Image (cartoon, rainbow, N blue to C red; front, side):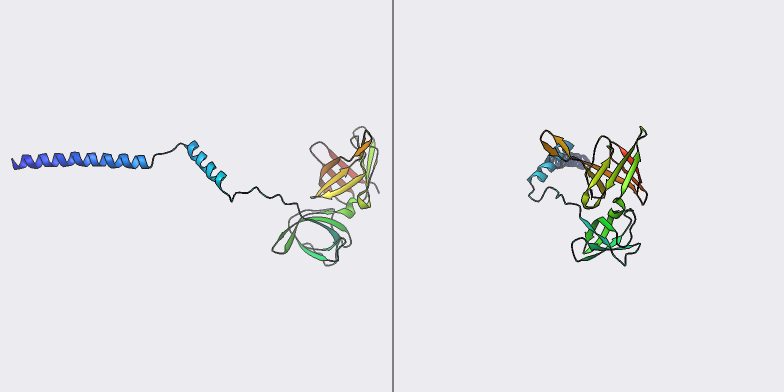
Length: 219
């Protein structure tokens, strides 16, 4: 009888243990129920939307400087006398391209980075090398010429892609060509922007999404 009572008690304890385990498991599942990924995403989006610290990224203009190459410039360091400012700027010449070479006394336009008061040239374009008369042989066998003068003036001899450019500039390492056109009684000045792939003493190659021009120095 004692043995039977002991077996009955053990069986009852086992049943109670199973019931307690089931109850504990059900409680923990209710507390950590998996949520669908889209529900979690919605909650995260809601948190971001409700935050007062999220701001639109600030658009910062590309820093550029124009000046004359000064004595003391080396392969790794550019000393630049700023245009219209009595100030000499020292810049590190990293791996950025120097289009058109660089000699003392020549005028250049430089895109640069500044960090902790240190300046690093990203790309430099030699404006003195650009300021020449350039010629290109067109597919129909004719020759078009583009003259880039001081003070941003341009002259086109024979149209270039049907356009007569009368102004130019360099911004962000690219060549901007302006052409004045008459629209009724008003004049507009559309601008074509070109990447400069080659600039040397005798060659100028520029391109954009529409066309590529290969010029040779004419004078």
